[in-house]
Length: 436
Image (cartoon, rainbow, N blue to C red):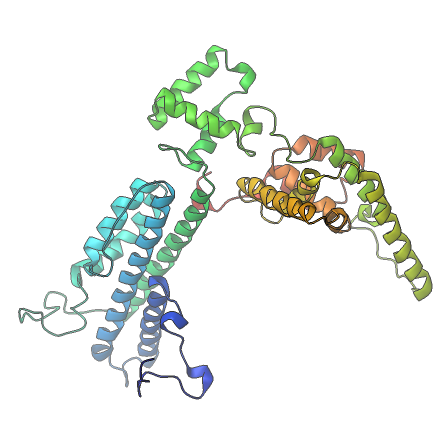
């Protein structure tokens, strides 16, 4: 154990102790935030003071140093994120962040490599580049605002003369906003590539766009398909093998398969089993069909009768297990649970496959230890949001016709506030930079 440093140590008050090192686990991005906030606080203090006490001539150096260092750290953080994304694409990128301080070189590496990894970086890179290059011109290595003279005794900033704090604030805040968008894009791409929906030459949104251009599979023997195929190959510079890889992805993807053919089958449960589950759920939850705009009616509660109703409904719900017990195997239970829980995050249809595997392992483990599957089934059946979640999942998985049939059968058209959004796809919208 190292001896406590008398200066850099914890003390009272507790709120004044900053967590650092392994106690804070900061990345380049976390480091950059502190320098960024410091720069902005100093700029605002100086502008509000109007140089009565806080001199612009004195504060320009810590302000610009903090700005520049924050940007360097942001770019190094962006490179770390890019290296991870490239790895998901089975591409290796290397950059010596700890030994590189020239912001022009750092930016050049990121800009070039990011647009090779994914073309969606191009738009945000164009917004960031002008101010990055301004910084690189005035202070490429972080020495200009730290010392008055260079290592060769040359005076710094002789060709600049004036630096306006209002301009600094405007340019830096705009750059910060764009760097945050860059960070959001990288986080999105990291999650997106984790899904595995891409090929050597095509990103996920490119495959989505190709699917939307293709005719239905029943027309693939016609001349129209051949023409569209050649157009797609030319647009994306694909060979026949590359095109076939894209088709294979489309055919096996819950969001894409329905565009060209029938939806992929639901996992673990048949349509008839699902319809029966919903029929029974609605019988036991009649209040669900109450239209959202119905007038509120005050109810006077009788504690004894209310308790009796609750117990009666509980018993009725338990009876459903006796009906489904014979066919409620691990796959059936997993199918129901997956449809329910997938609705919580339908951004990526691939998650449906993952969550089904998770619930299947859970159910099989339960059987392995002689546990009854009833508790898993009833857990979903008793959910007041069961129908809502299942319908959301059906829309997200391309089973809109099945969802519509359920809505029509049970006359739910006026009972679902979110229905229009689900039908139009708004409920499953992606951020603008996703490129779908």
